[in-house]
Length: 374
Image: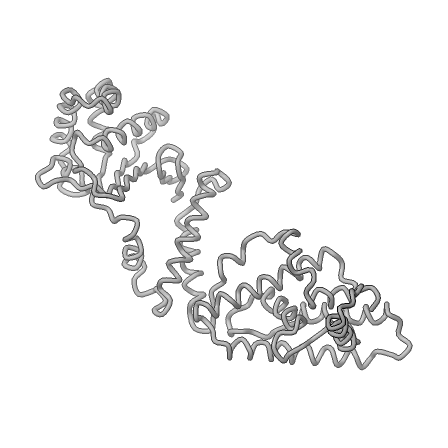
């Protein structure tokens, strides 16, 4: 099954590439008028369906579903178009009477269009309509989602999970509306929900949606004066990889802040992860530094630093949680350590310690430092 927005209807469901259901939604933030055969929303919807069905000539009539926050009054004939205890002929008769007798200027053209259909086509149209009245208002959607997802929800983080789910769906809706995404399938929704739920299980952590946002060269400019960037320039990292390194730093910082703000991890876990990364760095750095010779040139030292950097980016196995395996977090946190996070200072250039001391002296004395001179 696939779902599309604003094609034949507000929402369109397809099976095998053919429309199987057209869904009209009517949401009222204030109490709406009762849903009767003279209701403007109803005739607007019928008019929309007549237009849509005109493009489906020769195809099986899809289900025409109306989901509305309005309610059918007790004894109202439209109750006979609810999913059960239906009476299509009774509703058709009342709709035809309303179409002939109503004095509404708003609905006059829609009613004429309905009556211009043949009797059999009118009956087929009404037979395809299914009404769900008294639908929950937007502010009540969380309760509906909780009931739909049931016991699978993360007990301590239900609100956050629903926030992520609704945020994802909002993004999908925009893409459906601008046609950058032609349709979405039920399988797509299932996979997203199951993956998100898995991220809240023990040993794992959820990735903040903002992590997937594009990161541009303009965004990177904010970090250009940071210490970790100077350290990368000391090993002559090219501009393309420098931008990606800054992106990793940004993502790791953003993700860590989100976890702490949402009480998904504690500072102790973050510090333990930083310690593990520092330990990995220490093993690689010490081994590489031991091979440095007194006569090595600046180019040789930068090359050694690059080897240290590349080896750790490639081989780091530390985990903030056992099942959270996102390499950008390790790479980005290495850059945080290179920037001076906590007691776990690291670097890439074999002489990074001396260079950092020089940077601090220059900051204290107010000297303008050119990285290329160090």
